[in-house]
Length: 91
Image (cartoon, rainbow, N blue to C red; front, side, top):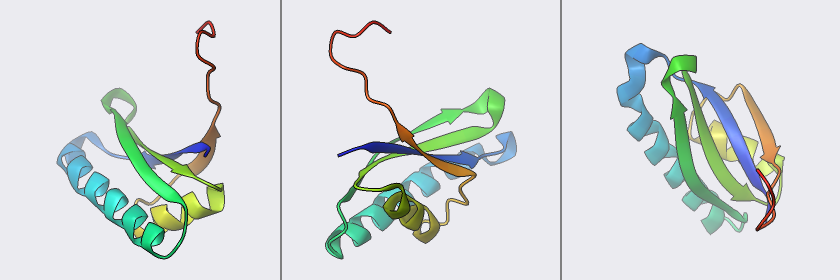
């Protein structure tokens, strides 16, 4: 199953919201999974210097990820597919 990044804005003044947003993302993915959508929340990545927070999901499509981001109220800037690296591939 492909992985997708949901890019969101997270100002330095609201860093404490990261855990809440992550919880909402996880719960929204679980709700959609119960509705027979193949999706799973993987993790979040916060980059304070850029005031950016990424949420990573495994899903069948970017549309499913956009739907979960909307349900979780993540206010996505964009949703993009992540290109996997092969084991042993140079980085």
